[in-house]
Image (cartoon, rainbow, N blue to C red; front, side, top):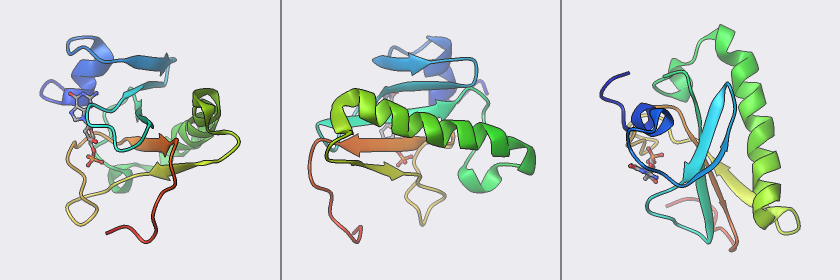
Length: 114
Ligand code: DGP
């Protein structure tokens, strides 16, 4: 989608610190990290949000969730764990309308969220 920041990052039109890519997805460090490890995993396909995903996106979403765990481990979180977050819509505080999984680690996370 032409005016989407994350589509531009995937296309290399906006620079990012890439940590992974394959035919389906792309991962890069968050520009405003909230933890020592904080990166985003996004589908190459422009899906506006988790709740805008279609049934046919299920296999892609499954692959992304598995890859999120694998990448968190590769980023050093295997021993102490990590937080996986998908913000959705205005109540979910989603600010970029391209589905993304936040992966945060390297510190203790609080619960419940504020
Ligand atoms: P959310 O609130 O879940 O929509 O979070 C969007 C995240 O995207 C936020 O933590 C900051 C990050 N972000 C926004 N613009 C850019 C950008 O241009 N580059 C990178 N690396 N991250 C961005």
